[in-house]
Amino acid sequence: MSVEQVSPSTGMPVVTTLAAAATYYSVAPGVRLNVRSGPGTGYPIVKALPEGARVAIHCQTPGTRVTGPYGTTTIWDNIASGQYISDAYVNTGSDGYIRPRCS
Image (cartoon, rainbow, N blue to C red; front, side, top):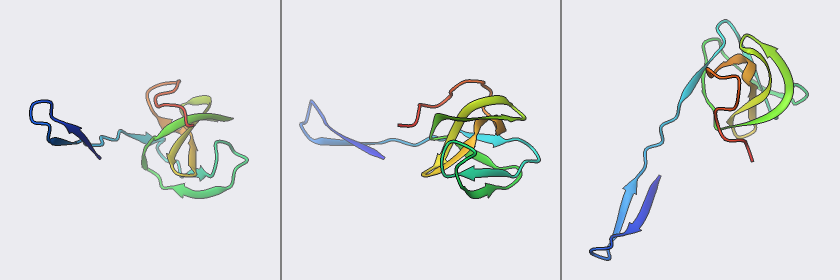
């Protein structure tokens, strides 16, 4: 991504490149995690993550309550467009929201 600004001293455009630094979180060991089309167990499974998967969380939203290795939660992590996993299976180091709410 880049941002274009105008230099106050020269009046010429200045382009700044921003590096996107994603943080990846580990899925619980020994788990093949279902990825769903929405934030709940009632949504269709769109794929499964392999054991040892690491995911980038784009945003988080409330959904179906799930109990997993990292506790019981209603938080669902959006890992791609139309792809959600329960935060109960992701080692985020927190019991709460760590990313912005999905809009």
